[in-house]
Amino acid sequence: MDYAKLICKNAQLSVRGSKKIIYEVLMGATKDSQEIAQLVIDSFVSEDYREGVHSFLEKRKPNFKYS
Image 1: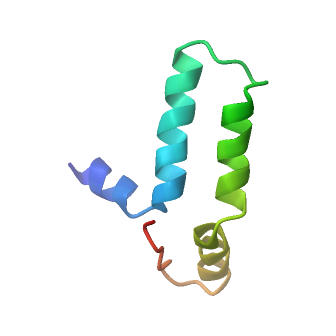
Image 2 (image 1 turned 90 degrees about the vertical axis):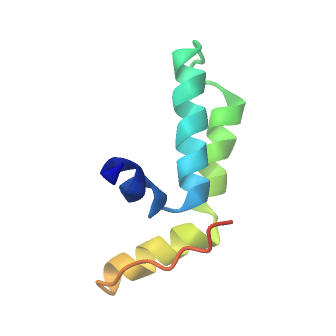
Image 3 (image 1 turned 120 degrees about the vertical axis):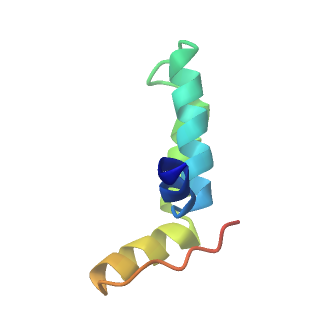
């Protein structure tokens, strides 16, 4: 339960993307998967990603939007 709570504190777009990528890899997806590449790109251009970077640099907890 503690581990699940820790995961829930992360940006939800990243959590969903990670779960999808893990599933795809376990099902045999290759590194050339367009869907996996798009999940990574979507994460990097998200508002939550920028918030994560800013909060890290400002040494504070992130305030993710949980979209």
